[in-house]
Image 1 (cartoon, one colour):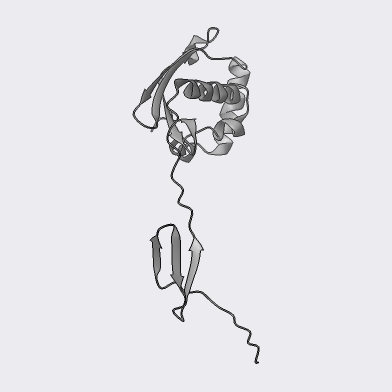
Image 2: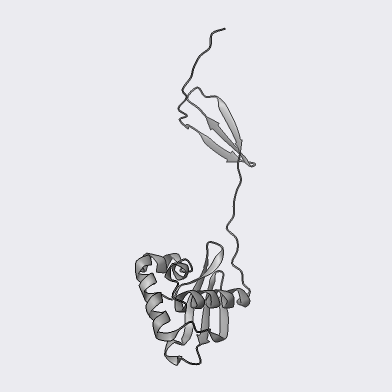
Length: 149
């Protein structure tokens, strides 16, 4: 028997998805089967306590001067508008101005699937109280969506 060394560049001509099986055909029209995992996005957590916890986490990161942590809690929309280095500076400034305050009187209203508004206050710094602040459920978590645009 002759041994052949084949370098196969798989060119996908036909992709058929059905019944959880992906069927590919290479250049020689040889079927290749592989299992397919269909991943559905996790539905939004409609528990207001989950949004309250997100508010607390974001507030702790931002007012605690942890810009990277706060940035990771932003929605995709806000992350596209605020560069991470800017968030780091904003969080440090907020920490110096207000300290690591804890939000109180947090109220949440879930709006449809994946959106919420939250209102909360800081008893010793009313100038940074929030009213009807936008939050969105993305990438499996509630995220701050209250950026300007």
